[in-house]
Length: 431
Image (spheres, rainbow, N blue to C red):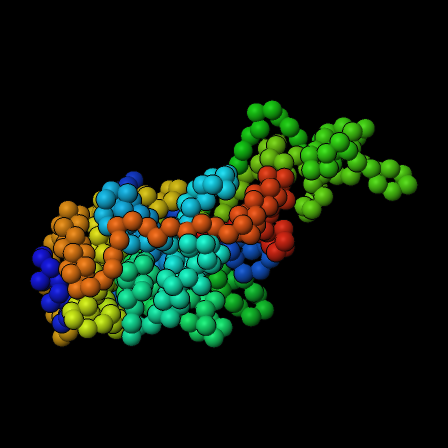
């Protein structure tokens, strides 16, 4: 595929797609662990996400293995790695190195949850001015599908994966761009249990037929019967001695530790002692796993960049960027999370989807995708786009540094639990 072919596809065809079959690296039928999400209710256990899909004339139970949002984040990670490898992709970067915050050096528009419109960038400075008040920021704030040049030149991934200036003009009615590339991984034909969760109404909840067990034996043999108390010398610490404990009331009763947990005084709350064996409905097996990708040319054609060939050049640059992201992920592999390592079950080709629904297979690998992107990048520069291989560098405002620093201090002091503030048990790990 060359730049001429890409230009033609973007101008005339519907999309580029792929349905790649995956399997666990442990082999077909091996148990994998999709992401977990909080259950409904205060103490509901974590759960996977299931839905019925119509496949080959039957309603088949499927499980979400990697969501559209999670896939977008992973593809952005791949593009960041490609940038480090010399691929010229415009992006914005906030440099925290001078602030000397623990574990934080740089945040980019490919890391930030809301991409180029994220609050991290909003609360940073460009040439001494708040970013969104700068000339570049004002162009981004005013960007629309009718003129998306500012985003293409500053952070084209926001156009590819979607972005919304939710704190923009009109109370969130600012710039909004739909995804042009959608990627999702699902497990197909999953054994499930229908569990009645309300005997009165007959309400049923779908759960996996798989099970995850858990337990721990403490090598020190610490028992939960041994009480722990709030230390008098340091109320944020604990002690097992009553004479060293903080006391309360006329009787000077020792205060159990920690004070904000459901059953204070137990060693398990400070991660000592045995963990009682447990069984949870987690983990799945499935007939097969599918990774579906669609790069919509129709969506790209809704974006406009100006006269003089800019529309063609801008749209083709985004299409080439999507191909780089996809082939970089192919090269990196599918290590999604603990006990969810996947591998291709054969290699599926990309398909060009014509406007009449017919298809044509096309092969493109990582090297070819990079070469195609380089050609699209040069063509975009030739069409008049101001593109840079170096990031647009921002500095965090003092108030942003301070809120991060205070959050880190609270976390180190053991006071950073969001779940305590919310009053819930966030046992899920959804992406």
